[in-house]
Image (cartoon, rainbow, N blue to C red; front, side, top):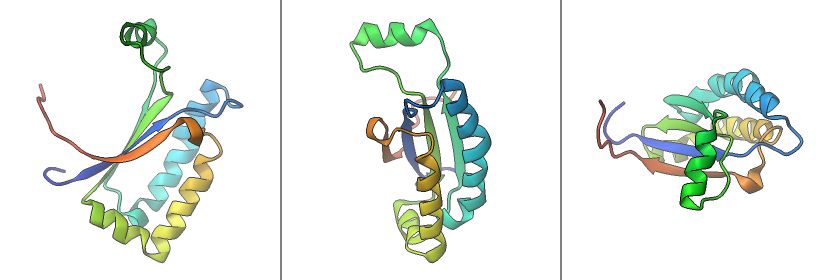
Length: 127
């Protein structure tokens, strides 16, 4: 997966009515299998969940920079191109898959405090 691949980055905040442990469990054990099931329909090449860990370092990083509170995790989904994502979402299968994902995400994600956007990577080093 090199070159022109693009990545969808989804920075997540849990809904307030869900305990952190349940948020992580649902995201990993229920939502991830759904994403796997529809990956071909949306033409996703790679899917990673990064769950925020509980460490005092998080508060130290935030405090030292005067930043907003931390998020609960990050999802990264790789695609071949923006055009490929658009083409996939214009198919009946892609539209259905997108709807299923959105419906499931609403069960555990606070959309109003989360964000989602497309990116391209610029590797600076890989030791």
